[in-house]
Image (cartoon, rainbow over all chains, first blue to last red; front, side):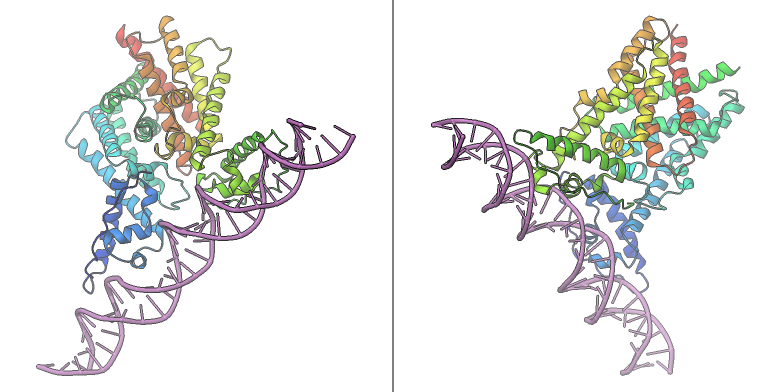
Amino acid sequence: MSTVELAEAPRRTRSRRGEGDKLREDILEAAERMLVESNDQSSLSIRAIASAVGVTPPSIYLHFADRNELLFAVCERQSREIEGAMEAACDGVADPWERLRRRGRAYLTWGLQNPEHYRILTMSHSDATPQCFTDERLAGMAGLQAVRADLVAGIEAGAFDPMSDPLGCSELLWMAVHGMVSLLICKPEFPFGDPDRVYEAMFELLHHGVASRVAASL
Amino acid sequence: MSTVELAEAPRRTRSRRGEGDKLREDILEAAERMLVESNDQSSLSIRAIASAVGVTPPSIYLHFADRNELLFAVCERQSREIEGAMEAACDGVADPWERLRRRGRAYLTWGLQNPEHYRILTMSHSDATPQCFTDERLAGMAGLQAVRADLVAGIEAGAFDPMSDPLGCSELLWMAVHGMVSLLICKPEFPFGDPDRVYEAMFELLHHGVASRVAASL
DNA sequence: TGTACATCAGTGAACGCGCGTTCACTGATGTAC
DNA sequence: TGTACATCAGTGAACGCGCGTTCACTGATGTAC
């Protein structure tokens, strides 16, 4: 990997009594920042995090049982962030399909801006972070229920296939968009072209796919 | 990770003079076998490979400059294998869409049977394996040109949208199927359901998506 | 208002581990004369 | 046909590294009396 010189923080001033939990926040923030800067999960060692926070390695263990638990906490926060970004993107928009389109775009944007976070969330070994992602949290990150709701709203409005399984369909949409995001992240040299245009093409394909199923079932 | 006891081979009998290259093949085969058994790239250390082959670690360096070069060679072989599997799957089939369907299914099947290989091929850091994947090899692995050819054949047969960009379209199809394969691999606990049925649903969605573009452009 | 003390938020040094890689070497074997 | 020798296919031991984690400790600070 490219070796990024991560700033070694000056020694952190000790928290006051009763405020020990501040360190926990500092650790999580440093870890997230380091992922952005280094773009490499493997640089996220206990020692490196401690150094970035300005504290000694054993201090990490005052707040996390082990490295996995720390990674889990980072994932948890990140997945909530991506979920929030999607919600914000379609806030106030009524048209179900436009909501879906914005949601997917927000997902793409977040992934491209936080590639290493996205990697950890979606591509790491499932047993490396044991209970890291419950089905619920994963579905939340993908916005599956929200997508499903938009699909159902579309069905009620007569714009989607009433015969189809909306939750299963939302999973398909997630898969397709995830495939796009992950390849853009993992194969940055490949000439896919402008992500925005690729996204529009993908969205159009999926849109037509769903819409055509409506036509077929009527 | 799950600790898999990898068989430690008895000491390999020394190759005869002039047959030193046999070790190279043995190393590559052992590495591929270990990836299947351990399901964890990180267990693919120089020492572990040497032990599995029945040879000492320095012997590896007789055939590979460093660990990256070895990984590159493994990737090369694997990507050719996945490409071959797709070709075999649609051999003798004339109908373009049926060819695409079988190609995608072969891609899925290969990925699910070789999850760790698939991970390395598609999800590893691009700079961890520097020139590991040229655009050409990557496109070959995804069968982009073959998919494009089928799409063009479909266009000429009047089954696809003549206005669309067939190469770009083949990339979209790759992304969608890759998203499916990678999530099935990385989130094995998530209740996606039977991969075959999910694939059929995905294929149907994409099929309708492309077909609908034909209708729209006519 | 002063002081003993429990508690809290850390520190410093060390552990054992597996890793990639290097270096000097060895012993069998084919070949030239 | 016999032998010296170059070459080939490895070996054995060691290097320095960064890692996660543990353990005994320290010193400031709030609190009870």
